[in-house]
Image 1: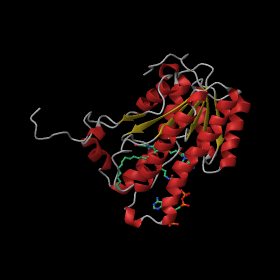
Image 2 (image 1 turned 135 degrees about the vertical axis):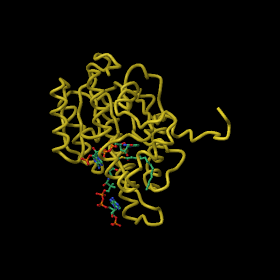
Image 3 (image 1 turned 120 degrees about the horizontal axis):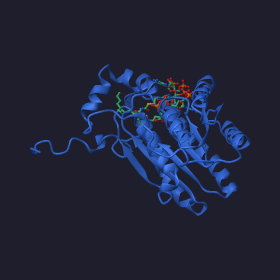
Image 4 (image 1 turned 30 degrees about the vertical axis):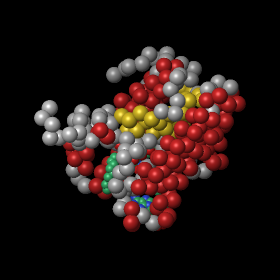
Length: 267
Ligand SMILES: CCCCCCCCCCC/C=C/C(=O)SCCNC(=O)CCNC(=O)[C@H](O)C(C)(C)COP(=O)(O)OP(=O)(O)OC[C@H]1O[C@@H](n2cnc3c(N)ncnc32)[C@H](O)[C@@H]1OP(=O)(O)O
Ligand SMILES: NC(=O)C1=CN([C@@H]2O[C@H](COP(=O)(O)OP(=O)(O)OC[C@H]3O[C@@H](n4cnc5c(N)ncnc54)[C@H](OP(=O)(O)O)[C@@H]3O)[C@@H](O)[C@H]2O)C=CC1
């Protein structure tokens, strides 16, 4: 379904980290269908290049480059490549990330550091490098961080990831204040459960065969999210329609984080 005009983001240039797969791929596609030029990135070159070919076939102007967001030099190369390719950057989507589920008493120091490094440090490196380009251009820019719906509730089994995402949340609120004078907006969204290959490999496989059905039972709207629903939200936040929104966190989870409510009340 097409929600936004194909001219909404015309002449805008967007970087999407983790844009070769799952949620990042769908967000990139929605930005592209709304007129943005895309640079998609991830560690696996063959994955981002295959996605680029799919987007080119849809008529979306796209480039792909491999980047490990944990490596500041590679991050700078991503920024330079984008500016060389399209002359500017207007939109950043920090989507790359993830975790492995484990009881907290069993997480090794190395495992803890790996998840914090990938999610929190990596997101800062990309955000800083892109914001410097926004400031140099004098154009402002829009940054959206893909966080998690249970940011403020906690989630047993993934303490390292919840800690890292709350770090991004604190960073995001602070940067919204620091960079408002440059017209740089920075927001976050918190997805509930969205079925992707990555989620199934990392989370559902560890949590058991019925993980997805069990989580869905607790969703008031009675289903998992559709990937395009995330694409629409990020497209909105990246667009002029959201020019007065910064430092905000929006949950998109079908009401899951509301909990079950007062189940003894008969309506
Ligand atoms: C149990 C139930 C939980 C219920 C939770 C409910 C919430 C449900 C909603 C789901 C929401 C979230 C969904 C998603 O996030 S989908 C995204 C899916 N994709 C990913 O998650 C990708 C994950 N992978 C990575 O990001 C990286 O691989 C990672 C950062 C995790 C590690 O990268 P790195 O290259 O640094 O890793 P190393 O191999 O060097 O290892 C470093 C240490 O980390 C330990 N480790 C790594 N992977 C695992 C693993 N899968 N299981 C256990 N331990 C792991 C590794 O052993 C090293 O530590 P040691 O040296 O001590 O062994
Ligand atoms: N699916 C869900 O239900 C939910 C997902 N999320 C979050 O949404 C994001 C996308 O998840 P999803 O699409 O489901 O899963 P994926 O595993 O498909 O997405 C993770 C993406 O991040 C990239 N990535 C990971 N680490 C790095 C790195 N160091 N440098 C560059 N790229 C990296 C991966 O590419 P590569 O491996 O090639 O580097 C991959 O494209 C994640 O941050 C996830 O935690 C949040 C809530 C719910």
